[in-house]
Length: 408
Ligand code: SF4
Image (cartoon, rainbow, N blue to C red; front, side):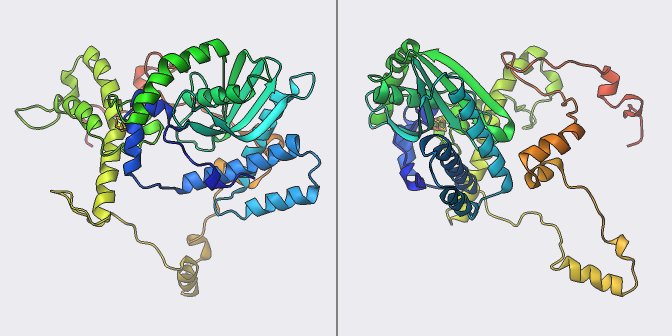
């Protein structure tokens, strides 16, 4: 199985392609930061190892003795970040790939954890594709995402496009591929996104967009440009980047009333102004969080950030040994029921404790999904428009709403 270390990253990595294509100098900027890992990254690596083992058993090594397969699973189950839900989510990935494979009249060519080389278009560029399926003129690139913070779209996905270009380099002479399907399998947020493009369009994009950006990025040239990629691609400089500050600070400063030094009242803005301002503020929002995080990290590392210091944040009191503490109260004459309550665990917790079949057959009939609260989205957002089924009065609490003159 692929060891985590073998999933090394190129300077022009596929996973950060969206970032270096839009902001070429960010690729070399990364070299100034130490390689860091996180619990989420380690969890994702473990989940990928489950995926690989399951696909190997299903497609590449169907003769794998059951005891070896079980031993492999058991070894992974000992991983620090293992949870029973990981088994279910990686089963969903295996089933998804199986559906792709079974749509063809005979067995397609399948490879997993395939290192693909796209250095002909981006210097030293390579990456590891989770799964590649080929049959006749069709190529499928499947990417498993275990994270749930950012919902990843297959359409125009730069990472998958580079994997596809690498796969075409490796197999283009053997398979007469003309159509490429991108698949994102992100089961924790029920995101199964697909997109299809032609090899002709893919190659045109590679030549006109990737090649010039890659050359600049590799040489450390080009213009800094902030955008969704700063946070979506986890740019190391996200909190300390001068280009982001240069772009965001004037936007925020324009909202400060020079007479009072305070933020201008929103009521003074017209709807048009609010509409124009929101995308800029939304761009600045994650940047503000990253700047705070960077400042905290620097102070914790002993560096000085002029004008700032570390203090102890808020904390809540807690019992060192609740069982012993409440036991002592019960011994003193209090009723046990006063200190213990039986409450159902949240649905997400229950889901982790049971099998996929039990979820479908026992739990699913009890599940309802209430209408979500209205949320702001840009006009081009693909989600359907919010349908209002309440009156403006109800939106603000109906008859119980606070009225002017009420005592708070
Ligand atoms: S934070 Fe954004 S603008 Fe700055 S280097 Fe990274 S990708 Fe470029």
